[in-house]
Each structure stands twice: as structure tokens, then as C-alpha cells.
Amino acid sequence: MASNATTSDSDSDSNSDHSSSDSVGYLDSVTEVESEPASLSLQGILPYQYDPPARQSNNEAETCEREADSAADSLGGPFPSTSHRCHHKPKRCLPIQYGSAGGPLPLSPLLFHPNAKGSQIVMDLTQKTVKRQASFCNAITFSNRPIVLYEQVRLKMTKKQCCWSGALRLGFCAKDPSRINPDNLPKYACPDLVAQSGFWAKALPEEFANEGSVIAFWVDKKGRVFYRINESSPMLFFSGVRTAEPLWALIDVYGLTRGVQLLGKIVKKT
Image 1 (cartoon, rainbow, N blue to C red):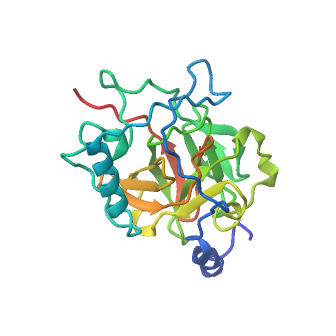
Image 2: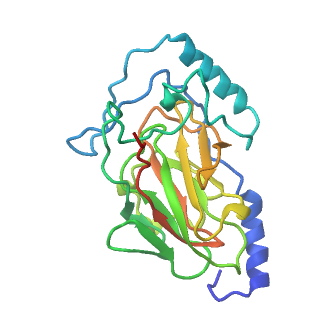
């Protein structure tokens, strides 16, 4: 599609894509991970190392897990943000928060991958901000390092372009972006990229694609992806992500969304 297509033409093309945007890439089988992987090796990102902790049998933690399962049965339904039964184990209910005494080891800053990106993406020197320079597609991006389970990927909408339909696509991939040839990236994350093995993504509802909004998304050990808007209560986005291997964030700056900025981690106040 040419970048100077009229609004009506783009609406027609975008609606065709939009009807498929809810397609989520799944592998043929989903393996539930019984234990959570440790943080990335402090000596470098590669190779990615796991050091599974001993399986816990704490009754309160199991109660929290059952509550999460029950809340996640309804797609898009609210996911409990607090619980008196599991407030001392936040990683089982909420994204990881950093900066507290005795908390998880800090990770290297999360940036956009400098090379694996769509042909319309322009990236700043800090690798924290990307913008689609034309059209409404060809703007797939990835994180520069694997994401730890329950780690939030936080994005600020920096630019909105109202002449298109559809919005940001978010998800994860199990393929190292350094091994992805950018010339082979499809125009769309949904449905094209998610049709390939090891890629999962879904479209953010258009009503949340507002300039200045902050979106956070993460994946839990059961392969469920949650998101929140401006620190709202977490909501189930989609499921079926395989968590037995490293995962990188996948962000398609599509349609209404023209630019996004990666934000730092949330630091818990003490």
C-alpha cells in the first residue's frame, strides 16, 4: 500500500488487517512452567541462563495462584491488583518491582533492538524512542534483551496519527532479534508475524491509543500476557505464550500509533 493512500482507502485496508488483529500466535503445544527463571546473567545477556529455585509449597502462594486462574478465565476481565493473602509475594500476582531492599537483582536497561526493525521505523540514539516515518505499517520493533517473567515493558504513546484505524500491537517472540533479517520482516505483526512459530501479539484496543498514555505489559509463568493503562488494574490480554525459553518484547507501531518511548522500571517506594 502506498503511504499517500486516502483515508477511505486506508480504512478499507486497515479494517481487513484489523479483522485479523485479534489473531494470537500460538505454538502447537504450550508447556506450563513449574518454576520461575532467575534473572539474566549479570555477565551479559547471552547466553541466557536459568537457575530455577526450589518449588514452593506455601499454602498462601497456592491460594493466590488459584485466585489468579479464576480471574483470568474471562478475557479482558480485571486481574486482582491486591490480595491480603499474597501481598508478601507480589511476583505471583503483579509485575516485578525493583529497588526495594532484598528485591530482585537489577537488569540492564530495556531498549529497542538497534537492527531488527521495520523499514519505516526511525530510532533515536538512546534506543528508547521510535517513530514510524510514513504509512501505517512496516514498523515492527523488538527489545534489545530478553524479558524476565513478570517484568513490565512500559511504553509511553508519544505520537498519534488520527487518519488510520487500528493501533499498537504488543506481544513477545522466542526468536532472538539479532538473528532476524529486517528485510524479511512482514508489514504487520498481526496476522502475518504471529502466523510464524514463536511469535505472539495482539492489537491494543483503539480507545487506549491516546497520546501521553502509558501502557505496561508482561507475561507470567503460565504464558498469560497482562496489560494495564496508566497504572490501572491489570487486565488479561491473551495467553498461550511458551515460557520455557527466552522471550523478547515485540512492539508494532501500527495505525493510529505513530511513536512510542520505552520507560524505565517502576521503583517501589520504601
